[in-house]
Amino acid sequence: MNFTVVLVVLGAGLVHALWNAMAKSLHDQFASFALLNMGVALVCWISWPFVGVVKSAALVYVFFSVLCHVGYELFLMGAYRRTDFSQSYPIARGMAPLLVSIGGLIFANEHLSAQGLFGVIVIVVGIVSLAYRRGGGVGHAQGVMWALATGVAIAVYTVIDGLGVRASGDAFRYALTLFSLQSALWLIGVVARQPRGWWPGSRRATIGMCGGLLSMIGYIAVLWAQLRAPLGVVSALRETGVLWAALIGVLLFREGRLRRVLAPALLVVGGIALLSLG
Image (cartoon, rainbow, N blue to C red):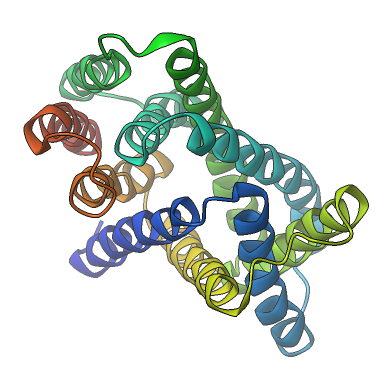
């Protein structure tokens, strides 16, 4: 794994934390995720005729990935409605490397060393520390469950897309095909569920659509890296966005003390680093 790939994936982690913060900042989560998909749709539909469609061998991966991505957004929306950003994001993203490593072992014959296994334990400790909050109540517990479900969806689509982009051989074609179908499906659901009244105004619409563009840029970078490095390592490096999310949650959203959030987030990042090196 060369230095350029490492930098690209680390940058993707920062971009991912930023667009999630933009989605969280819009109080109407239904509208925010609709706008995210609208921003993605505009770019994809304009670019698709010039880039082309993926190879037929990758279409089955695209189909299942679309379903997983839609589920991921629904779970993430539920988590953001119920928990703090500095908590739900690290829990969801910390779960993914654990499950992706298992998926890489089963489907791509990628094995973990003893150091990688120790990294798994450290991540689990960090996630449990983030999930525990004294006096959180039922709503908090439900939010944690939604965040954990988000992590499962992330792990599943990461493995599917890692295999799919390798079957395609072209990260851009794969990404545009995936996001074109995903955003179309989401927008159809928006119109069917709430045809009027969900548009939040020009300022919030701009934030949401720009967040969608960032999400696509970050994920294309990840797909590009998955052509050049093991699935588990790419996923682990990208999840350094957990640390950015913890900082954003405390400094921007005023979600408690920095020490209370940063310490378990650092545990998650440290475990991810051990996992990537293992």
